[in-house]
Amino acid sequence: MYFEQNHNFEPGNIVYVLYRNPHAQDVAQVQEAAVVEDPENSEKLCLFMYDTYYPIDEELAIFPTEVEAMRAYNYHFGEDGNLYG
Image 1 (cartoon, helix red, strand yellow):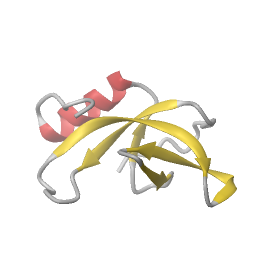
Image 2: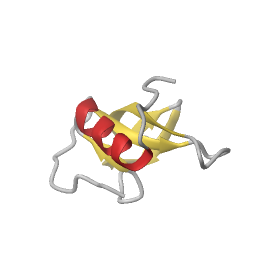
Image 3: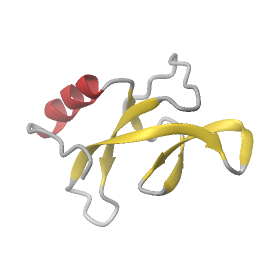
Image 4: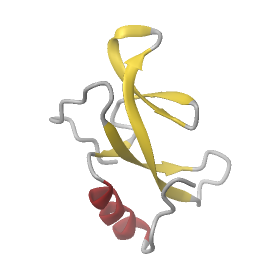
């Protein structure tokens, strides 16, 4: 998956993630997420979405803008993502 390694994330940044439903792997969407301080390690950052903390790593497709996320979604899935829901 895509991971913007050179981007300097800061707490409070809003990013966009291609998120697959863990209960239905054929369902994916573009989801807005907040970059926050990791509650278990204040030296690290993580993403906060769906009331859950996710590590920032190469397992997530993270995009700095909604436009970039939608382009990637359309490339991989061929239709518009369902932002916010």
